[in-house]
Length: 461
Ligand code: HEM
Image 1 (cartoon, rainbow, N blue to C red):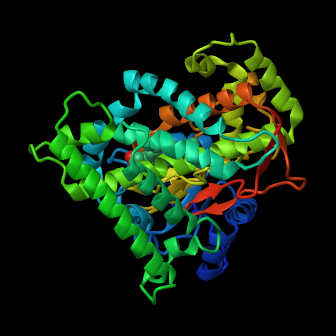
Image 2: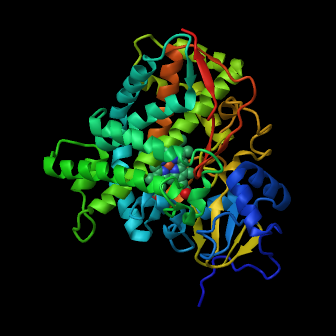
Image 3: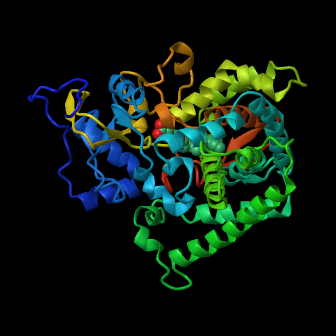
């Protein structure tokens, strides 16, 4: 017998769905995801069926949800009985990250892997990263020349890549890490535009069709990256240093419930996941924040006044409690949420959600972009106005740039700390001028919402 939590009366309708052919929806979602979300939201409301992923199609109808109460219902019950958070529905990412990582694991294996990872991203570990982040930021920005024009996206990516290599491997510089950084940048550059991102959605585009095909280039880069990662894993297995507390060391010491250690393949996939998820996202959020701080000088000036009140020798940790800096970071992640959607959750028993009935097997994704642009929660949602976060408190289901429930972002605390320290350090030490005269619009970058492929700042002094 099927268990029901809230048997839906027969009159409750199924959520609406677009009449557009699936191929057209896919095309819009890949090439202009924000226009797709806005148009569908205007037509169909807070819960609608979407055809946006051939990998998920076939696993169950997919729905996008942006109503806070229903999001709370979904994400506070996603550990298995009412809803679950299966890994196989994230197949889209397997081409980039492999299959043996947190994002593609399900159930107990997923829970155990998260338990292994979480200590590295919390408590004293996190505190120890603050100073390193400040140092990395000062070192890299110290190389910029006065009067030079900075490609903000690239500059932020070099900072966040160095930070994540430190967190994951415990070191800042080595020949192997420099090579790894270069290869990862080349790999991610292949999906830097909406059009080239299509290779993630249509895996057949990744077939090897000759030396110049995207498939052959991805395969060559993957082979070289894997060789470096496996060499590092082998070196660290041989080193056996119990003093080291970085993520790789913790993973090497860990074993599962049966006492089985993680295999090299598990380690490789997990490292790749953390390296990619941990630096692309933060680089985008930093670019967004720097862009808006200079596009709207009043916001930048208010932040400057807050930073100027800190003592000259203040530790980077002092930046973490500055209210306006915190609000700027929150507003950047609200206006342009790097993850437009959460990962899918699966309905395990028939249920009512946002006035509609859902069936067992349906898949639901949190529509973060639409939630963050609700007029009732965020008046003038298209404006960058950090003050809104000082004027009212938002619940975890009204504001969710890092998702929620059992798959809530593993790196949320690291990301928030990094964003504040990098922005605070850069703006305390330098002054910039925005070179872009026309507004810079966010656009797809791989599976995320990128921003600022063209943002340029001139370093004034
Ligand atoms: C601004 C920066 C970031 C944003 C906006 C972001 C956002 C997200 C979102 C929305 C999810 C899905 C949550 C869900 O489905 O409920 C997620 C998952 C994840 N994030 Fe992040 N993230 C960021 C930075 C990081 C960092 C720094 C790391 C770690 C190094 C990281 C590692 C992960 C991992 C491993 C998952 C998968 C969790 C799971 O499947 O259990 N992220 N992130």
